[in-house]
Picture 1 (cartoon, one colour):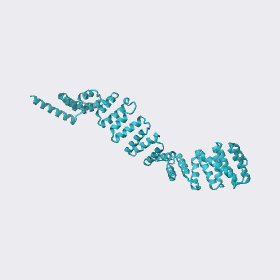
Picture 2: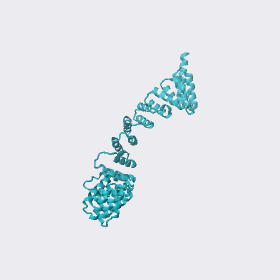
Picture 3: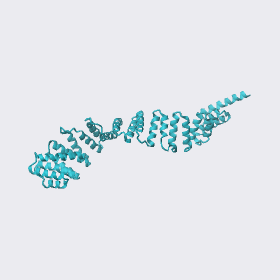
Length: 391
């Protein structure tokens, strides 16, 4: 914006020499004021113009235009806006001169956060574009201004006009478009916008995480996993929760072994029971039984409830004596019946039928169930058969 206003200043300087529509008096003062300004003497240039403000309408408007430029160069934005407003409202400036003055006024209003006042000027500018102006930057300004006002639909309308010019992607316009899409909950259209931003800024973590979030929201779990894995591959630093999310995505996409491996990359996981239990679950889903048992055992050091998980897997893997030892550590009263049934199975496998039958009866006493009754019937018959054989 500063470059644009500086260009206007230079354009103004050359027009002083011509002075085609200025009176001789006004042209002389304008040239002197411009010389002062070029020497950095903005206050003196302003004073000269104000002290010699002509009555002729066009000359007056032209001086207001110059004052707007000099006030801005002198860091006085409010007086600059006032002067330029008078120049524009006079209606005496025409063609490119009128357009460039209105453009400068609109930009200063935007700089001064006078968004509602700036918008009508920007819309007037796109309706009267000079032949040497494309208009893409005006539509970008319109989009920016609506964005500041929280007017999301007009933001997208302006950005559509801007993109119609087919310019190379830039971060600022795409960020404006993305912001409006997110505010309007246009999740699906926001995904390609984020991908375009990532082409420009592949090292920006925020874009990656927003992309993954949107893909998950749209139930595109494979895409979310691909994006998250690619971010990791790109060297994006992933914190604990980021790695946990990546692991969850692997698990949801049917790759529990990779999920468990990613969990293992989390620093200090061996001190976090919730992370250990999550990793153990993934190892279990991957049928990596030994790793699952080891991880559940680590978790059980922090929370005794996980002795149950260890015992179940030991039983499943035929490590019955170890399972019985682990079951001794399960103290949850709500699991008494389940523990008794687990003991029944382990004792049966160890051919300790009397103890197995005792546990089955205990389980049925605690919480009568078909499973317990089935064990009692089976073990009773088995003992009878064995007795008959021995006799």
